[in-house]
Length: 102
Image (cartoon, one colour):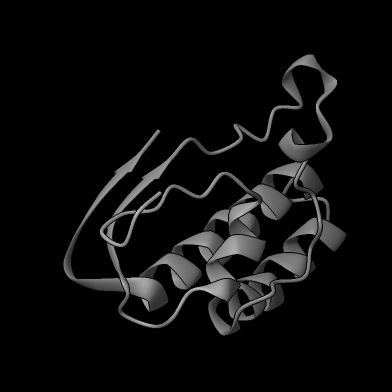
């Protein structure tokens, strides 16, 4: 690591909170698939409460569908997780920030 660049390997929802607004030039992310593949805990994002304002709004919209059994809890939790991640990423991204998500 030097003054020009830094690589963070961490839980993105935690690491993004440590960064200043408009401070990131590029984001590369390998998101969990939400499938629980190979049983890793980090690939089972099923919480139905958002940690950002955008995630909370989405959560408020999806919770009634989960309760009515119109939407799978695991899929709703994953959608809320991705929404939170994108909201936090947009907060730290500089204008023109390059992003690669897979």
